[in-house]
Amino acid sequence: SDDGEPSGSAGIQIYNTFCSRKITNILVVVVRYYGGIKLGVPGLIKAYRTATSEALDHAQIIEKCIETPFSARFPYALLPEISKSEKKLRLNRVSESYTGDTCTVTWKTRRSEAENCIKVLKGIHGVSVNPEA
Image (tube, rainbow, N blue to C red; front, side, top):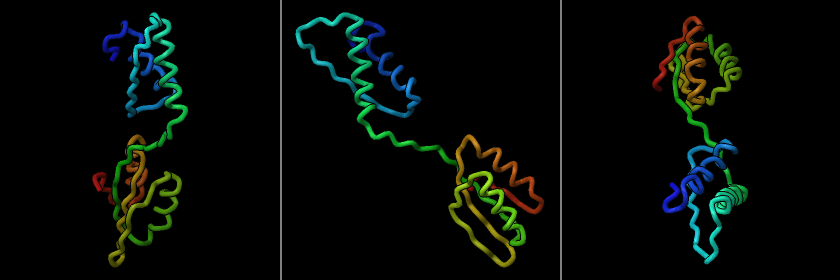
């Protein structure tokens, strides 16, 4: 929000700084104290953009991916093939259990890749996939 500043001089400048660095899910608060000198719109734009850039330059950026869990049941004999697919699909194994001749494995993967991973595993004869682990 430009909250009292000339339109386009604050909020959009902060937002564009996030976009140019491809940063999402972030909160930045810029507090500006009036020091007696009028900056004008170009000066305000520069001030807000610079304040945001400098804050991001000194911030610890933590990258987190949104993950989706899913599980599969399959005969123990398929474990080598499943493990090969697991590695190829870059799945993060969360848990596994073995009951008699049956394996149940739960994975997490990026939400954007989950549909493809489930499709690949369902394509292996004898594998039952539960997309809502």
